[in-house]
Image (cartoon, rainbow, N blue to C red; front, side, top):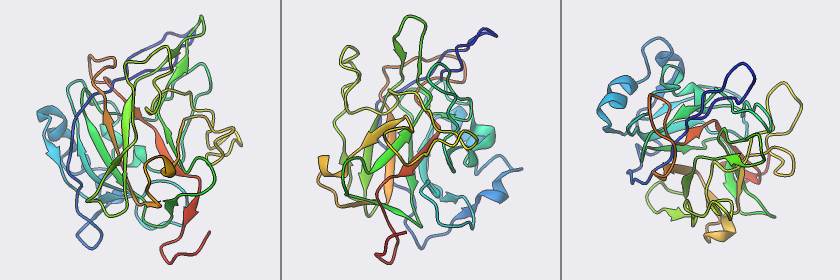
Length: 257
């Protein structure tokens, strides 16, 4: 995971990796409210992080108003060098992004580790294919002194039913091309206290994805898989997830917000 590159001292490390995980429980199965996990350490996340085992567990953000952010974690598998953010999991991946700007990486993230993955669900506002970008993925990439972007990549997959998945093509070895199709390549500019909209691809930062590119009209589930070609070591390796947001959205009843 990468941390801010500031005069106070920078902690770099973020990772990505390849891997495949099955979706967790679908709607209708038992879920665990995030509030019950706040003190307990979140549904065995600690033991799974150490063992690297796959966990299918519905954990959600509890009852709250309709918003464009992820609502539920249906599956996760932490890889080697994961650990950062698990003390705040799953809450750390819910809600709006907390970007630190062009030149610093946020610490409000969950490190997936080498080859780690996480599957999230939107329950109150689904992503739908509309004009341009439909979905934004926020990591904590930042611009280094000298102009290069410190990026750690993940492949993005989407599904409407949690069973059939569509993968956005991702080129994690194409540094010169900016890792086209991968998440984790652009700094996050939106934060709750800076007035920058987290649903406007023109200003929010992060990485945008158009459902038309994979031929899917609607997405309720998003899976992020570390590409295995990132920075690893300690407990903050691999792709670092901050948040997801819906740009073009549809309510469960088919209406628009």
